[in-house]
Length: 386
Image (cartoon, rainbow, N blue to C red; front, side):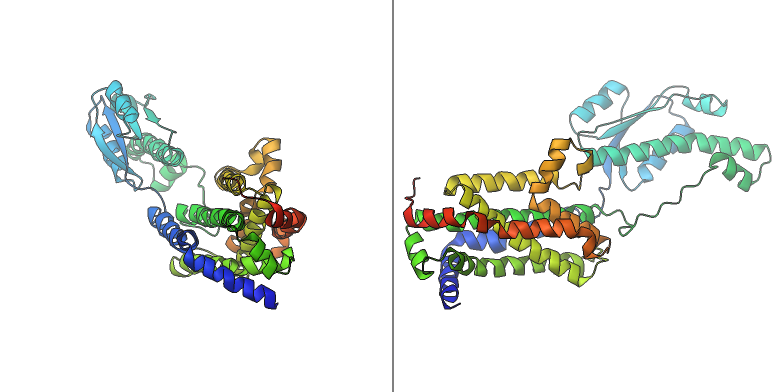
């Protein structure tokens, strides 16, 4: 314990003298928290630009355009004389979609025929395309419903009869846990921890690699009595404390200040935070042990962290991916963090429901034990090669 204490004090001096640690452990994580949460502060994209090609230009079609503009997600920014100009506006990223109302739309509606009304939207931006598709589909359905309502009122039908005829099935939607369908809740709770884990991966490999680079490795091992377990525990204890502090700052910010839903309570948050920190540091140390090279280990850690965002399953479910990718996803700590978060923190299920993911994170935490011999040999025998 005395050796661990003195190595930890030595590490505190290294953290204080090297500005990289200050930036990557404190300043950049704070910047990332502010950036992602403020970028999606409105919960959903609002006032997205769309255009209209209204060749009919009657009071009925103009009413439809006004109703479309009244939607929270949509803002009509331009009326185009033909489809070519509207299509060019989409290609120039001036609008995300446009509604096409051909000549004779109103006459067809009033005579009971089915006018062909079209809308075009870009799926280059997936969220924008999905939300605008919903609004454009709704507005085209409202047009026929309004004309039908007027015709049925002329025939003397009651409001209840009209409602039953126009909407025989009523869909009652209740989004669980996140009734606002707030994209900030869905995405920030994955992106911010993912970036924090990226920094933990990189700094774990960097802090060991720089012992070789700056010729301090033999001194470090001497202070540990050539015991690699003592050396690693003393070295990473201060870093663990800093990263735990930043993770708890993130937890307080999103769950306490911003009020993100956390049905699982404080203990689930604390447990998943502890698991995330020790698993991330363990993975970074393990990668350096596999390839005791500062450059190679940091490259692998950065690649693994970036791929984590694709395999986490928040945007596209892992079970719908190719079988090989689904199996590979289990090798990413962020995937298991997110599974515990969504089951136990977000939905409030017992921690035992995520026992497999907890076990995998604990395995990542102890993986340095598998490569302890390689790390010790590298510190005592290897010569740093730029």
